[in-house]
Every structure is written in C-alpha cells, then in structure tokens.
Length: 436
Image (cartoon, rainbow, N blue to C red; front, side, top):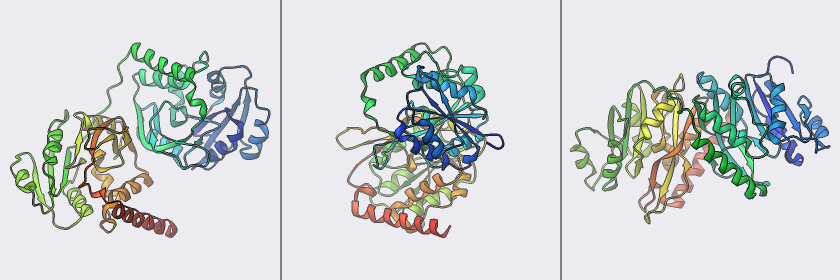
C-alpha cells in the first residue's frame, strides 16, 4: 500500500465461500485505497489464499492455526498501522459508504474513542431487513490507541469476544458515539441459534453489568437554546398527552411553538390557553409547509419536532442533547421509537427516521434544505433521505425514547395515498441521481 492507511480492517475467515463478497464490499468503499486489509485464517481454509489474490490482492493473509477467534483477530491487530480499526466477518458485507460514515463521526468528535453504526440482517439474495443495534464488531470502528489501552480482544475467549470488547469499551468510561446509519449487512446464519453461543453472550453481558467499576463518562452538553415545534391540525384530545410528555422533560426546552392548521375540534382554542406555547397560525397548506414554517421561526440553537399523536420519554431531550454535545459541529440526533396500536401492544423498537424522533441543529436544516411540499405525505421520508446522503453526522440514542401511536386518523393510514407519495419521492430522487 502506498502512503499511510487511515483504516485497518481485520477480516476473520468464518465461511470462505462468502469471502469474495466481503472483500468486494471493502474494495467498493470510498477512499478504499487507504484501507489496510488483513484476512486472518485459523489454518482450516486452504482456499482462502486464491480467493484473496483474485478479489483483493493487496490484502495481507495471515494464518494462525488452532487459535480462538479472538486470538485470530488479535493477530491482525498486531500488524495494523492505521489510526482506526475495523472488523468484518468473511460472511458479512460492509454497507457502501458505511466505513466513511463511521470515520467522519470520529473526525467530528475528537474526544470519542469509538463509533458504532446499525446492522441490517440478510439471507442469501434477500433484501436486508430493518436496521438495529447489536453487539457486532463489524459495526464498530475504534481508535487504535484506545484499543491498545484496553488490551484488545481477549484471546482466552472462544465465544462472545465481540460482546466482551463492546462491554469493556462501554465500561471504560470513554465516550462512544452511535450513528443512525446502517454500516453492516449481517448474514443471517443458522448458527445464530446455537444455544451455547447465546448462553455465553448473555452471561458476558450480565457479568459486565454486575462488575461495572466505573460509571459511563459524562458527555458534553450541546450549546444553544432548544426549540420544540408542534405541527398540528385537529389534534384533540391526543395533543393534550403529547404536550404533557413535552412538559415532563428532565431537560426542558427553552421555547415551544405550535404551527396550527385550521382546526374544528378546539385545538386552536386549547393551545391559546397554554401560557408556555407560542401559537403560530399556518399560512399555507400541507405538512411540508407547516414544518418549513416552524423551521423559519428558529434562528439559532436546536430544533425538535413533536407531532400531536406522539409521546416522548422524560429523558428524550436530555439524552439527545448530551449525545450531540460530543460532536464539534452541527449534527442531527435520532432516537429509537416504539409503535402502539389501540390495544396497548407495543412493537419492537425501531430507528426513528421520523420527525418526532429528531433533534437537530438549525444549521442542519439550512444545509439539507426545506421539506418538499410537492411530495405530500412523503416530505418527511424525502428530507431524511437527503440527510442520510449528506455528510452531516446523524447520531442515535441506544434506547427507545419516543412512542408513536397508530390510529385511524394517521396521515399515513391510507395505503394507496401513502404509496403514491412514496413513488413520487423515489421518482424525484432517481431524476436527481441521473442528473448528477
């Protein structure tokens, strides 16, 4: 490799028949010439060398026979020269642009020792599923100096070395940044159901929780005032509960504004009676216009949206404000959310690519641009897509801090209308992509 690498990736050889896909995913990353790749074999895969030579000849193949998986990976770490370290199993794939996202997150947060992205499972040629956080080394990028201080991977572990490292990084007291972007496609192997592996991972998690010797580091606090914008039309009676969850924040906002569309259910009258809420009549029509009007009333600091039928956990703003404080420039921060139907049953937490989960600096809106009024219901999805395509850090809290209620009057409840809006959005993005 010519020049100094910016990243060393240690590839552990699990299933060699998929190794070509793993290497191709590294080769296709932005600035891939600055990625130093070590493929570490435990000595049981004679076909590894021709595969490496055929698909990524500049990669270095190391052999460590009869060693634990952690010891095999450690052999690659001993050879690594780059300031950042990444990992990849030979049966997984790095998401296009994912490593660059992690790198930019670390560059934007000099005091952070590691950045973690989300994971999407896939099986054979199926489309990857929804993203999630997990104990997967392939979704982690660590500063090499910090990893050396932690002692690297534990070579005595034959199972659960990933959980052990995650726990020690978190337990060290050093701040870790989590970004909302998927960075790893994880092959959904049958071996995941191995009860011994599951017992080992659960045991390690419990042991680290019980033996935590240091508290997690206190992060910085994002500077600047926080404005919460309610965008509402005919929001009663759910609006009352939403505002209650807003007022219950452990880190209260500095300002609350409500952009109110023409309502016939008492929404405008109720909001007018609330001394802590500035009521702004909506001057146009449509969801995008209302959101843009809210953004236009904020000239500095941070903005969070709360739809009238959503609820926040008490620590939502505080957690996002602390996380954003790790980054030196403007950033956006999401939280996980759960969806509740009328029967009170909650679904599994999901990454919150939705306005009520958003906490963002006002400069993010200036960079991304306004919500597109021509896209109707797809204006939110379009804006978040543009955020993901930007180079701005998009952070993620680990826990669910927002609840979205599902009911018959949801704007997205009409499938045909929602589908038409999404197709219009996709057509717009394809047009822009072809023009670029």
